[in-house]
Length: 426
Image 1 (cartoon, one colour):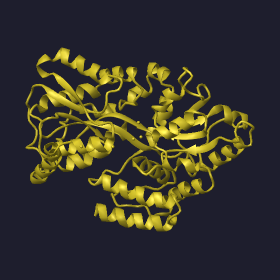
Image 2 (image 1 turned 180 degrees about the vertical axis):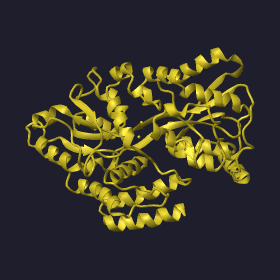
Image 3 (image 1 turned 45 degrees about the horizontal axis):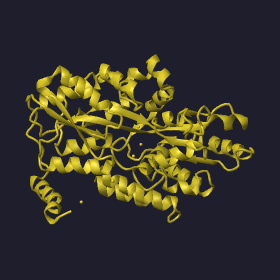
Image 4 (image 1 turned 45 degrees about the vertical axis):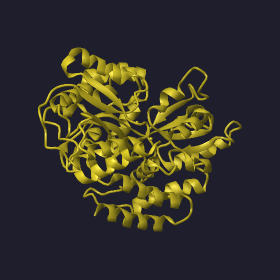
């Protein structure tokens, strides 16, 4: 699936937490234990109450090992900050934690989470790319739960009227199709393409996808930055030139997921890169979508053929400071197991990590985008598994945004970003 303090005494609390965290030095827990008892599950906002229903089923079966849901802030940066503060003071408040896939390396490196025992989950049942996001230095620290990659939403009605029988596989073909649509009476005011280009994590994701879709990589196989290669610069050049020639509308320079989703759903775009959650909203038959019945999805395009998406998702890990790690481990295995994943999948549209769900006839009938998403997952790549990921992402956003705004050239932005990432990753 792509992405934010009143009296003097209260004001002291965050500062005290940080001081205690600094004193603890992030040294990590004392290792695994076999403690059993009640646990807490720190997760994101449970908007559909589906997670609570899964927990209720667990609680009925294990009244002595009940799980309590603790909801983290909706904003990803704030959720991470809350978890980090908790771990730095070595608190046992959370037993199972839901981590963005790119946080695994940071939490494992600081020994804030413990490796999952061999055989706890059947690793062969997961989407392979999703499984990799839960590993650090070859060991599984977090079980994949939610996954996904970017897909291309496109207007079937406009492409058909312009004489095309399918979506584009390349950037050049996308530009060609947009030009033809704009020549239609009903297409003159429709923008061509938008993804997530605001200066936030979405820009990092869209930049990585452009680089990968041009045959490059942000980090090479040995973990070294590779953003100044010809292929990587070709990916950045696609973004820069798309703003220059109007392929991406100027207003999309600030788009986050919901901005682009609304623009596509209101009929203002021919093509839109976003996550799978958009499908149900754009297909709604209650009058809220102007493109209901007039769109479909495809893999994202690339320089010479279908592109490579960035892997998103959330994983479940056991806190190194939990006193009931045996129960926590069992709960993780329960949530990511086939039976519960199918139950969760039937109740909501977040793409899940179990590979068999993408070929399940009932699931495909309910969510027609699953075959396309599965195709995209085969070529998707995870974001860099680096300990200082937030700083890496910020550096990418700074230099890519400068190039897109015309404040620097593609070559200079690539060279400066290469230097910045090398300094951050050693």
